[in-house]
Structure formats: C-alpha cells, structure tokens
Length: 310
Image (tube, rainbow, N blue to C red; front, top):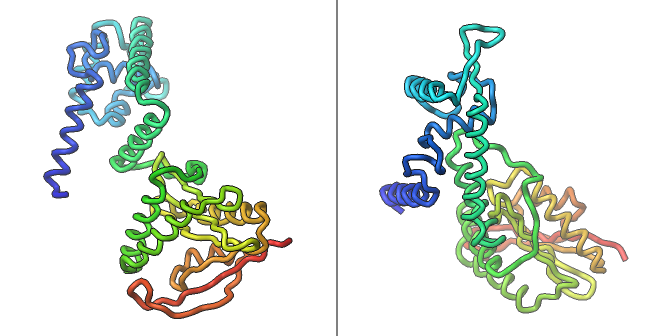
C-alpha cells in the first residue's frame, strides 16, 4: 500500500473515532471542561503531587499552553498548587474538593460510555478489539513495553487457524530462508490432512497468542499406534526470546506421552539452528539426514526422535 494510502487510512480512523467517542462537543462527557482540560483534571487526580513540568512532559503539551489551562482550572476552583517540600521553586499540583468531584464524575461517565460501546461486540469481538488496540499502542509507542512469557497464552485450533498457519509458514520461510511456494503447499497438505483426519484423543494443535494476535503454532499428528510426529513449529519474530518454542515443544511431549505414544518424531532442516537447539534440549536425537531441494534451495533434511517410554 502506498504511503499516501497509509496516511489517509490513519486520518480516516481518527475522524471516525473522535466522532465515536464524542470528543467534539463543547463540554467533554457532559462536563464543563474542554477535552484538554478534562485530561488535565484526570491526570492530576490519578497522580496528585505532579509538577507542571512533569505533567507537560508526560502529556507532550507545550508548557505555555499548559500554564494557561492550569490558570483557568485554578480560577474555577478545580486545581490547586503548593510548594514542593524540598524545592519551593517547584509547585505540586492537586485537585480541590470540587476538582475531586469533577474527577469522579468524569471517570464514571468515561467508564459507562466505554462499557456501552463495547457491550454489543460480545466476548470475542471485545477480545479482538483489545488485541488490535494493544498492537496499535505498541507499534506507535516510542518506548513500547516488553512482552514477557506470561503474556503469551496457548489455545486449541479453531476455524481460520489452518489458513493462518499455512500463510505464515509460507511468508516466514520465504523471507528468512528463501523457500519457495512448494513449502507452503506442503504446509497446506499437512493442515488439510490434520483437519480431515483429526483424532482429538491422539492429536492436537496449539496456537500461541500475544495481545490477542496469533504468534506461534505447533502440532502433534498421529503416525501410527505407537508413534506421533511433531509438526509445524513456528514462532513469529515479535514473540521470539520468550521461551515460547521450548514451551510449545514441551506441550507436545507431554501430550504425546499422555496419549500413550512410545515415540515422538519430527523432520527439520540443518539450517534451522534455533529449532534444532530446542529439540536437542528437549531430548530429541538426530536419527538420519538426507539432502534435497524440495523447497527450491539446497537443504539437508534431518529426522529426529524422542523415546517416550511404555
């Protein structure tokens, strides 16, 4: 998409959302405050004892404009200031009793309006919206919070996941290793067979989600009565470094053992160093190698196996 279309799309959303949350009225949320004044009241009430300098820095507001807003709020008896104990040159901001009542009213109306906007979406729609908002916040944040392993949740597959797995494998392995569309076709066959022949007692798919967005996958697929195969382990770049690959492989091993398999096998390539390290750490052993060009580039395929016991 050209840069101009990106810009137009963001501007279109801005116009939609400002209308949707009703910020264009003279009094924000039915209060006597403009949007900027209401934001100051809310932030001072949420963290009283801020200096004007800190408040302006946090909100990205020009200090001259901020001073004019604060003077107006002080004249109306909403905000007050007092000298800082350790530096009389600094003034600490707080709300008056009238300001605290205004803060409580703003907070209650904002929560009520937001709840009313989310209610028609249903649980799934709300999860999708919150996930999208988190992604947007992280992408636009100059200092985005770092994800942790606890932020990733695992779930079973549902409609749409097989298409995602196929698409993301095709994109990732082409971009990172130059594999052609024949690899994507192989993934499509594996996912199609999984769905058509799915045995829930002896097969499983895990989809990893971060901020409501799929970021990883792995499968246990039945080979025969005694052996299963670990397939389609994928970790998106934004979820790497969180131990997710190790976690997904451990899920596969635990499931395969509980399902009664005696052996868990897998097929990988010699150049997939991160995956090979995970498999080796989990106890898999290299059984056989073979050279091939199935995906358009020279590769050395490797068969690994893990005994699971009786």
